[in-house]
Image (tube, rainbow over all chains, first blue to last red; front, side, top):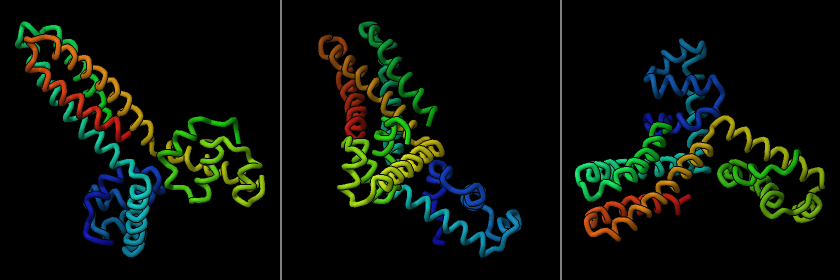
Length: 123
Length: 123
């Protein structure tokens, strides 16, 4: 086990489904609930060393999946661009609302914002 | 093995990295190159039954990963909305180019299209 790697907590949200229930719980308690190894050991009824091993295996699996698949990097870049699009379309919508000559654009801007917004809330 | 499931070919692009090289090759030859089991057996130097088993295991792994993680469904919906956004922003850009009063919007529309376009080509 290395320094607590915040990337793990993030990747766990996406790849946690491939861990066993027990392993996912242990990694979650360590990374998201910030429990100590001793606390997790008590909670899970296993030794401190067992907890350490379980976290290590979980980390390795999670990092290996992202290294091999890269799906989270892909989702991340899609979501980043979407939030940029969302900002731009809000700007556009305000502009269209304020300028009588561009009223026809207000509807278009709203549709763009809506499409981006729906995606963002799925994220 | 069931009917050829076109979803498998699609999911293979995303989850193929988690199969062994051999397994990925066999599944790829079957689903993407449309080779027969006999042809794949000859190519891979294993029995027809070995090919069948390998494809079946590969299919199961791929389907299980998507069932547990759902990452491809997520990427798919992000990409679908992006292509919608792309269409709308092109419409907006044309409108802005044709109407002298909305010239200030042309730049904004271009930025939206660019953001959506960059994502699309990553897909």
